[in-house]
Length: 288
Image 1: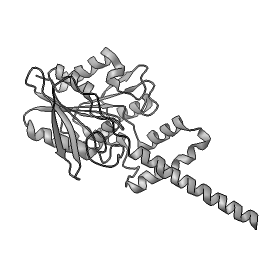
Image 2: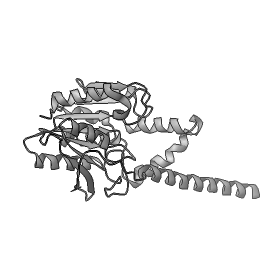
Image 3: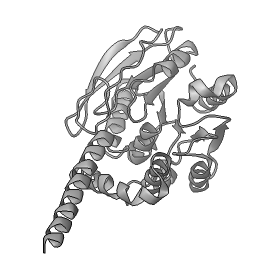
Image 4: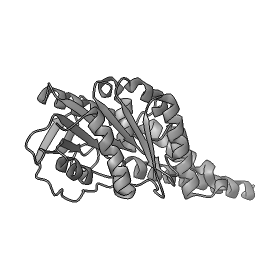
């Protein structure tokens, strides 16, 4: 009898530790630390937009050094990052008007959790409608990395109305993305332990994995031209997922950055990648 009590206590204690650990890990994933990007070299003015669900979206707007532009580019970052000031500086120097945003629960925007791009789609929708209202006769391009790219895909109703879309390091489905992250961080024999944090995030933040499938949303961006890219060594959203996304969006321009992991591809890709991006924008959303 004593042995059974001890066994029961051990099992209950183990379940409690696992449950609390799952909650802790889930919260760390859903509530990333707030980082701030380095200030841009370009002169910017602060902007704040209110989303349809009450989030205050902070951002920066920069006008081109030439003074006028016929294309506005909206920039969206990945999980745990903030405003994309490196891309802003590049584009402003090439004659583009640029607005870069802190997605909800990041940087200076309000919100208390991230959702792999699902709730962030409202941030994209808000930014697109703002730009459409402000520069009615001009073209708009969207450029997102990782979670920012997913948010653009999920906001397809508004994203399809723009003139060019750049999606970097985009996962094909959340199931694949989650499994890849688990494989990177814990031994395969312990992989089942990752179920707890995932269930916690889905339950508390009302996320349905069947919704989190960018591969099903990317085709809906048509007729907007699409540029898809990833890093050669990206284990989270790598070339195999890029190929799947490209099959779903025939005609998309694709690029793989040699030697790059799940990082800022503009920094990692060098001149060759930068020029490919600029050619794509010039073809579909020229600065003048």
